[in-house]
Length: 382
Ligand code: HEC
Ligand code: HEC
Image: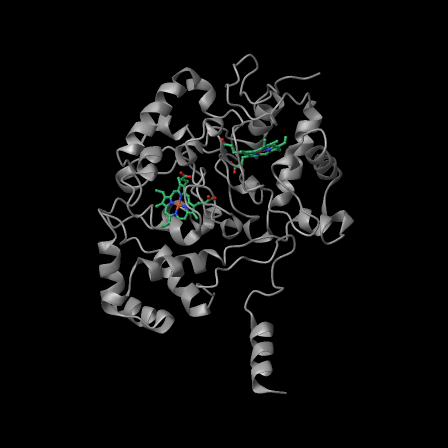
């Protein structure tokens, strides 16, 4: 066999992620200019956990995306340096490698681009610029060795490009499938779900219409359409102020305001949602459909962490996009959100179904709301 073909075959068979995805997940997308290697992943893990990358020396990425908390912080909204709070709930990084955009409003297109923002955000890691990161990456002896080994670079040649690529490579290892639902649906293991969970799945597909946004494909399920919808969170309460806020935001943006700082620095500006990125009026209050994988261990919920339990989420949907019956829906609400008229038992079944989406490695994560009593009101019923 010609050497060239042998090489090609070896490369194909050795491709680190080929056919190795956990049950229920599609092939992992890896950018051609940032292939996965064990050394790069190890370097990324070290960077992800390095608290020196903040003005107080206390806040690493892992502060808000903690492995023992399913790579989130279980807080309503995140706390950065000096206990400063932002406006948004930290999404888990688990399976973020599959998303077509990053952040609740999708303002960054890739993991490589995403990681440069929290380092500079005044309520997160609050560095004045990326120089302090580069200084450490270029002078710390362990980093010097690692950057040379992984990228063949040292000194000034090490830039944020290499730092971001290593962090992204690490994040691409944080993928998790193999949930009871995966074993049932993709593995053909009929006993993997309880009868309530099976009923919940049927509701998810049919009366609940959940699957129209939280998608399930024939051979995998990411439970997201990668799109943006206004489902009536947060914006309902301030809807009369929205036109004024939108105009003020566009003016600030035209003057060069930074979107990341604007949306995490002001609660009302945060509610503009996808509009802050696209300036499209019909995307006011629209946020990215989050995955539902591991959702039972990543409470609280929604971009503002305003819903504490999966039952509260179900009540919100059942009411047609409002927390309480009688509350006014906002003018920009997605057409896909209407009162569902589900019974109490059906709501329980849907919650049970979502509890079947936890991957085995996160099954023991203690959630922030396990001791919270369940709300007694269930919203509209037939
Ligand atoms: C102070 C808490 C905090 C720190 C520190 C932090 N994050 Fe986050 N992270 C958040 C919050 C809050 C969001 C959502 C912000 C938004 O959508 O506007 C987020 C979003 C993300 C997302 C997008 C996930 C998705 O589903 O869209 C990724 C990936 C991520 N962070 C990785 C990182 C990395 C890498 C670092 C370190 C460089 C980091 N984060 C530091 C709180 C934090
Ligand atoms: C029109 C599209 C759409 C439909 C239909 C829909 N969702 Fe969602 N879902 C979203 C979006 C968008 C968000 C985030 C909204 C926000 O934060 O403002 C979300 C958030 C959630 C969350 C919170 C996840 C988290 O990590 O914070 C859960 C749980 C959820 N949906 C479950 C369901 C269930 C169950 C159904 C069916 C009853 C359903 N969704 C129907 C789009 C949809």
